[in-house]
Image (cartoon, rainbow, N blue to C red; front, side):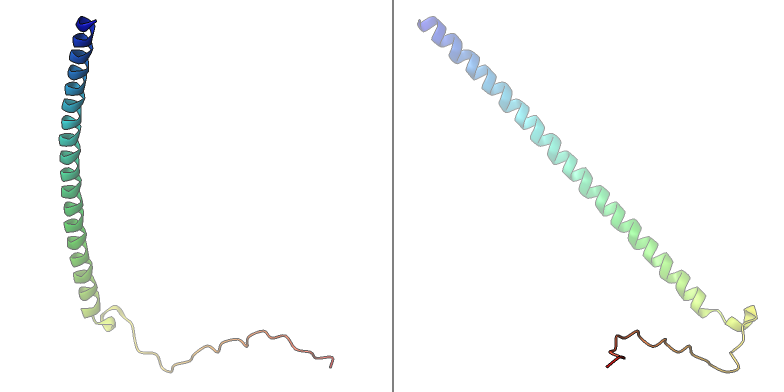
Length: 94
């Protein structure tokens, strides 16, 4: 009986060591993966910032242009469309 007990204890110990090593490897892998994801997010944020800067520069260039250069003129008079009357429910028969 003691021979089997030592065998079971040795196998259990070996299994637990193997599980521990597997968990350490998994932890290192996931920490590395998280670090890479944070790096990718930071890169994406930086590229978004550059795109925003380019967008605002383009808007500033468009706003700096004189519309008269392209043949646009001021309107002779301003007219505004009237809003249609809102539909309503009445008791016309009473």
